Image (cartoon, rainbow, N blue to C red):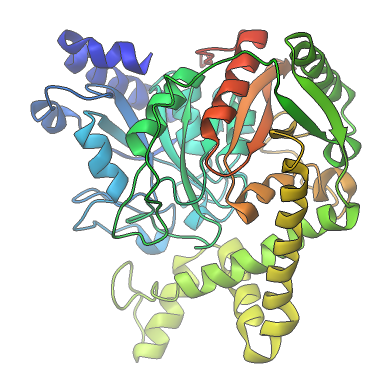
Length: 471
């Protein structure tokens, strides 16, 4: 779809204006946009050529945009208008993409529900009683509702891949360093990835081609050449070796989810793939969430120490600088963020660093080493992206977060952030009229392999260009 749009130069203006109008029309139902971006000026300055020429897109609202409000979903940044662009914004403009919206997100990207945005929750296009998942839920909803064919997200634990499952679209987290993070408001620097949502594998290939590449302003970005992912796409599964993460299946009690997944695995075998069961050490799998929680919150506390109401952002009054900072942070952050900063600060106390933060980093290394051992034999690790469809927003949140079905099955995708390896969610089926996805994780820099397996799954399910008709 993206390639066809880019080639259709005559209708670029009408296409972008239609997407802009549709986003506004659906806002009352989905609440998936924080700031609308008028496409007119961008349309006047379109390049003559580009892989995304005249393609309407959306940006998660932690992507810095010059002259356009950028809030990261937080009240403390609700008046922040940057003076520069993120690297990917310039890359997208060079390719001819037209941004029509800054999408809703969990506050400062810290959350998995998209319920903590200061503008209120985003709603799932398939069923507005349900959450989109987070933290990139607004971007996911804009793609899933057919407003735009591609939207930018960021992924620190599963913040692209879980919303992709809940919204029935493709969600891609590429290899750490594949896309520059310059100008992305951070969460946890060693875990953050820039990624994106599309409705097809072909569009995912085009999107990564546009976004990938070295940026000297982000020293973690890679100098590796960027392949032509579209040209390398090959859905032939003969010779592919795929490992099912048994620990995840053991933690899922929804029999319908397991049936959909197992049927898909049988069809991959029928197409020539070797699909085996693989079991990780259960103690390591159960350590993913606590290790992630310590590392992410410690890094977030450090990264956001500048949000003090003094240098920029919303300032609350006080009798001195200390009181101004205390009042600004107390009123500027939601309760979840304040709790996470307390945990992060505790982990960074000098007397706690070895006992908590350094120990979590050692556990992270053990998990990555276990993944590398699996990749000695297999090309891809695979499992359901979630045990269930998107939860109801108003449902009582009484799930035991230390139970097997939460601790492992709903948090294992952070393995992809610990390792930095490419990981992607694609739709695999429907339950109760709502989509659910399957997650693939491959070796570093093997996005082409990941896309090819994803393409085979897309051909099996027929879920290409899937989108919801919002009622």
